Length: 361
Picture 1 (tube, rainbow, N blue to C red):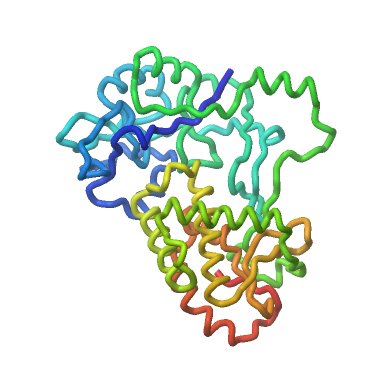
Picture 2 (cartoon, rainbow, N blue to C red):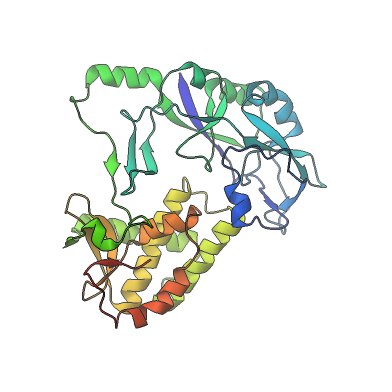
């Protein structure tokens, strides 16, 4: 049994976008809940208006969109897992597909993932699924930890696409039950071994930094520093941010990039998901604080083992966990305060907090 992540060939074919950008609340609504009873037919248009469009059966959009032909072929496979939402488009008939099957089928013991400090999953590095009836009964679905991300599909879905010559679909293999079985037999996991990779996060809203017991701050090694610099260079390229942009100018550009992702739900498709976008933009934001205020990249946590990559003020009074900070914003948990925070830091740095290593977010 194989499970595939479903994506669109956004660089080869034309993509759609709403005529009026989605609000943050509207974007958050695509989380598995049914929208059909309240849905108003949505006007859409080509993303690149100046180019002659080359349409596929599966154009890129905030949620899956199918052509009439693709919907006719795939409907028997997906009708028990989704609902059809009408789009208004003069050039051809497309239908949005809202995935309502949110399955609790992840095998967390065999998966590899990063977590926030409260135990919530930040992102998956490797997926593993339980081979159960629930998984077998749905050919398109999302998982409880990624309700707003792109869906997963079955081999039968992929086969139907390929046998009927449907265009625009891109599949990434994320799990093969037979391959996993072979791996388990060849190298069984040690008893009690944890496969998930923890990543410390920012404190919960109900807790204060001192309650977190943050006592560790340490320099990053050369390998980690090199990875962060690579992420900065890559994000500059994908978001068209020039090399000379630093400090406040860079913070302003990050703010605009974040705002666009939130409003449109679109981001460079070289990123796998919003968690990857948060890493890229988080590194850029951290670099803005480094170049604008002389902050430094450090590992911060209660111990060295649970430290998260942050930028820290020169006196080590203030900390911004920039990658987690951006994850919270892009995930809809916090407002986009990136530029506001940057402008407040100069005044804030003149103050002395009650405790060292106080989070500033």
